[in-house]
Image 1 (cartoon, one colour):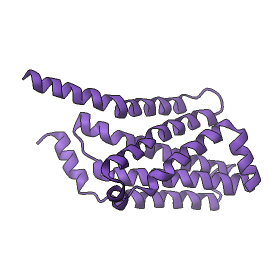
Image 2 (cartoon, helix red, strand yellow):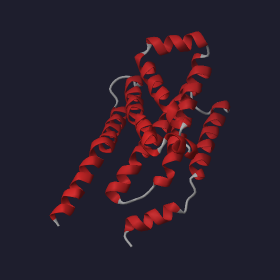
Image 3 (cartoon, rainbow, N blue to C red):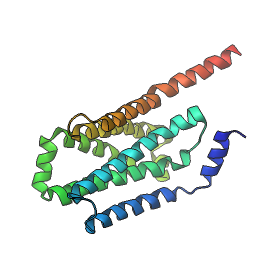
Image 4 (cartoon, rainbow, N blue to C red):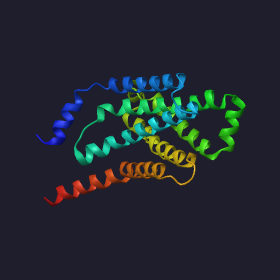
Length: 210
């Protein structure tokens, strides 16, 4: 048994609910630090950014599941739904902290969405994620059919790209970290769209030549 097989077998023993539990504990811990005034001079902004960056990490993790399976033979597919739902949870918390604790007024929230391009981009990404989380269940798969469900969930690609662009746009000045995450998302989305097709084509060609 290879390293990838052993790693997959080990990870498969971990239940998916651990991801949800860890996310809730982290969010609660950050909220408590804010309440206890331990998030620095601007706790609201710190909490807002922490929730947004956690969402970005889970978005990247979700996009990595297929490449890990296809290229490294590490199968984490059982966690993909939990990763995606947790990503949405942190996006929602990021939005709520911004709207309720930072801006605080509904009129000002709408004005920011309309006038600030990086917020417009972020809200567009959030809107694309809503149908994904609402259909992230077995009932939706059965009702829609597997093919239609998969087509709908391709919305994760533009949602991820918009999230990466939002991260870059909200950064002040030239910063390497947001650009790195955007580049990583572009590469992962590119693999999901084009790399898998090229890999499948190469495998078919290889079988024909044998």
